[in-house]
Length: 448
Image (cartoon, rainbow, N blue to C red; front, side, top):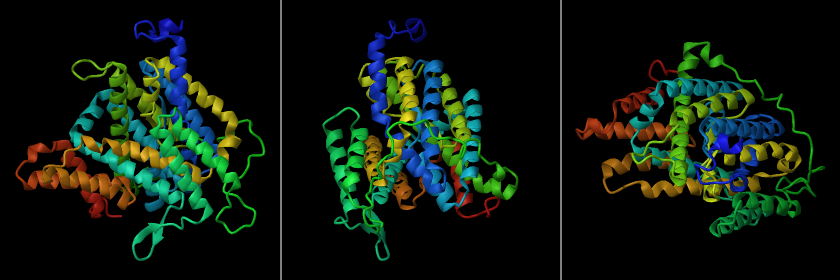
């Protein structure tokens, strides 16, 4: 049955090889079970419930992708998108997390419509390739910055805005040690390096005093039990709110947020799809991907499900490439990964042990992975370099993915028009830039 369902022989693979590949993918991305709840809990959401939701949405969306496309591609709540959700939508804009989930759901619905009509691919093509890379790099810097901030390595400073923390503080030293160990594991290509780094830092935290001033308190709080039934998802499931749709003013304030969700999700997923497909040999000679439409549909449905369950948008994970390197060629690899996410539900007490100092190394390493694509950008010509560098810098420095993308697109549009080369920037790109312009300067209808 597996042979017929997943075309194992045609793809030149076997059941054992696919299962090993699925295990490899899970080991590479299991850190999301600790990191995603840690980030989203900063909005006031229930952390134990978020662990359960993260595992369930990762499993369901990965099964969808496996059955609809037969790709060895795993999905889970995305790094970068969750930071945008927590620190920009809920933090800077002050949107309640319930309404933020509503925006994620609307984003998924629009995605579904755009994917079904083929407009989604046109929008993706409307943004220059190098701008997509710059957005990825900017998000990478943002994620790495968040990791250093959460671990106390970087702190606020009244004179210089930011400075380094007190490295002599035991909790900060633990974070730095965790980063160093994780760097070495990744550099030595140890399978599951990020997860091992998180685990080792968490264990070390059992013996490191916390910086909360309470005597006898350690960075890591020991679990009372190793295995338990999954935490209830009731605190977050179905709590999405669409209050922002009830008035014109609220809707126009929400529009740039939804647009940013759309753009980031589009680039993230399409880029991962193409990258993994290239490694599996599924790309056609003309660069097109068979069943790309199905993959985008699966992704859209998963985005809506993620909001319903109570987490930020689910995206395709580039860590799927590790499973491909281990021999994964079909949806059976993804199905194996999904099964492991479900099994992880029963070790929630262990996941709850993980402190911010242990998730920080994961964020820093993932950020570096995203930054590595900077080599695909050409900075020789100033007129092309300026918008790209501005985007990369603005995302972490404004602490907002939305504002970074907006400033980059505005700079691209301005330079294209000002240098008499308006056709170098697509018409749809001008429209998106115009929406950000209206939002930045609070011009009607964005005059909140």
